[in-house]
Length: 285
Image (cartoon, rainbow, N blue to C red):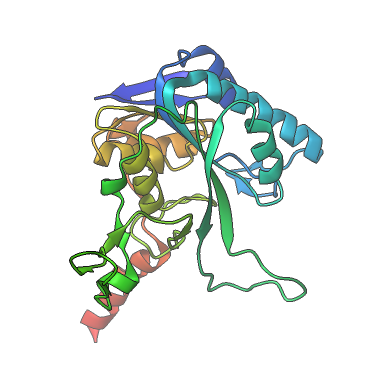
């Protein structure tokens, strides 16, 4: 079953990713694909367990959607793929005969939670940046510049030049990105176990697409990719199999305000629900 919702250049496809990629997305039509699939580590997605019977079965499934994504890319297209650290080497090797792997990115985040005590806990997730043709692809370096700490903070002078010049205060990010994870008290938080931060997607979309380009996310979750695409003036297609998360996308993209008679609104967080009660208690004193 596949159901489509669409408004002002943004399309949500409710259905299985393999089916939707096969039947609903024309080959060679996508400028940028961001893929953040289930990692096969046992996460619970609204009752749908992220666990295959074996690693080989999981990887065989991954190779299916990878092949389809490669087909959907334009000749000038780019693709970013996330995966669990233990699975990324297999995906990396598999893709080398199909795409040019330009960067292997580490998304680093600190963790306030309990870390492993018998081994070194993981504080990063890997991302592959790939293109179909390394002689023609989009990379808007000026749109993603960050502070160059030695230049911006210490104002060092480059005396090697004929006319001594201050070092550039800005630079293109390297391949280690320190961006906080989405946490419960953050404004952008949605009820999803693996939500990616808007800042991460904004950097990817700004760098590797242009206004009005078409962005695809085949495992959309909370539809952060589509949300960031809309904020940056791009078009988007998001595929998601869970109805609960489709409703989040419909709300975030303002495609529908009501779904099956239900008003689409963000559920208040526990501390937000407590605030009116605390206020009333305070007023009675």
